[in-house]
Image (cartoon, rainbow, N blue to C red; front, side):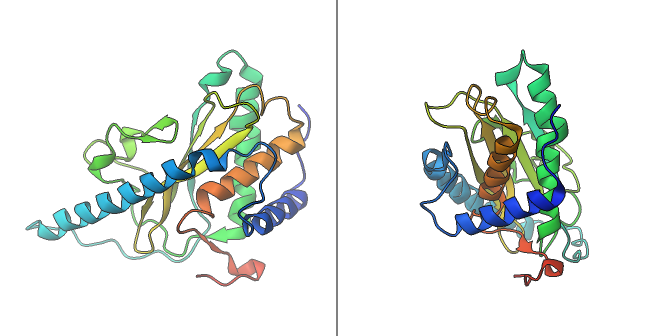
Length: 234
């Protein structure tokens, strides 16, 4: 399997993608961001309403457990959930995405960003998320209140491979926000079969880095840049 890139090169790519995101009209060739922007906005609005309803229910409860103590700022803990049915017959592509490309991109992102208020305890979404979807992925009941226990993470990222329109290589977006700062807590990246897999390994990494930033950074709220890279926590 070809070597993707060194960590310094990936850091440079990530910084470049951050710069590009400052200009909404600029994206990598084949980015399907525009096709899911409305779905993302609707999902975020629904998430805000669910959070408000959940908070009202909790405040009305007669017995409420004390809130766990706040955690200090830290790199985002990202739970990856792969749904790569589009490559059901391509074990090599699935293995590369699951074991190499995506984990490498996440490790690099963790070097540059911190969550200002990490999730105390386990991440759980309001019960209204039962039977809902995050772009092309059904929401895992494990992360829904009343259905599962959640996990000690800050963000759930679904990685899917649904068919795409001609010319689209990938797209991504946030689906839910949470916490006191309403940062993204759930999102999805879709890699397009027949378009993503024909790219060179380097271009594949560039695409994934770009889409990761759409899901975690260019949403309504985001992890704050880490101070040890010269950026102030928000």
